[in-house]
Length: 358
Image (tube, rainbow, N blue to C red; front, side, top):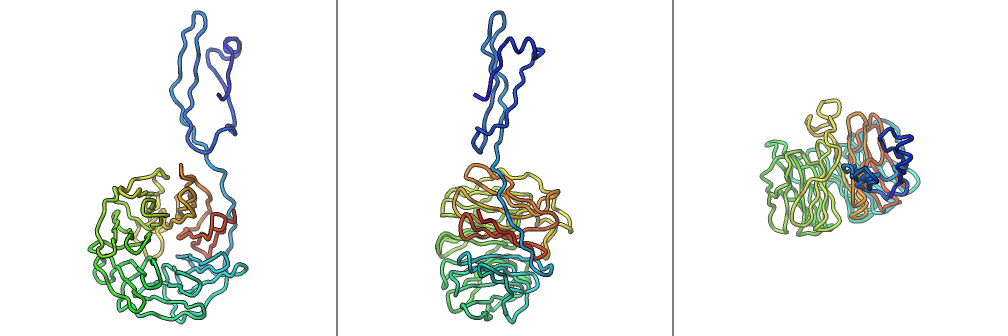
């Protein structure tokens, strides 16, 4: 019950119309169906109104913006802890955060890095154009021979001896998949368009996403295509388990996998990022909107990207609904990672790093 009015009030003040207002502070976050009911009295028959669905959103989280010197675009972020975070940039820099300051690391290979991932503070991989893959052992970065000129876009692994990089074959413009067994990188067959992101729950349960709604699944021996239910380009994938996986992409599309089927989740429907201005560097015009996804749990998930009219955007999923958590003008946000629910980093253009401390 949100409130009530008497028939006497209605006759004296309402001119035949009921009026009531509330700030709804007593309603929990989520979707609520509300109806107005007149129980009837005397010569007046009772009636019930049509249902009004009221969405109550979470109060936006407090994100702090850190701007690094220069205007380099940051494409990937990952860390082993809150005091050991790595970010990679378009101009070939690898940045490191020690819990106090960000500093540039010496790599000896200033290529365009697209993603970074690792298993620990002494086992980190950075992937970039022309088959460039670097490895950090806790003291220095060194080049790892990939035996290819592919363009890796995403990297993930189940261990230091089981790492996957996905992207684009520069010659055929088909999807590229590379696998590292701890000693060498080898090419795997994809038979798809280009791929943008990869994540898995184990060495025998891995998903790769890419152009035209492509989703591939790896069972430990073979990659096979699965139905995504969309033709929109998918840019990022992440999950908590084999039955709880999220994928994000063009036009704000968000997909969820429950262990058997991919389904579309409610997001902003049309984000309007179809032109050269809003498309990220190195992508085709249609590659806007949501680029990265990460969470601390099934009910604490973030997606980052760009929305026309807002700029950089961070969406948050609380296990029930997706809502806008943060917006920032003139910046495309490209990746998100966190060490916990109260320690989350989002990175993007113009040297932008956003941090959420809970």
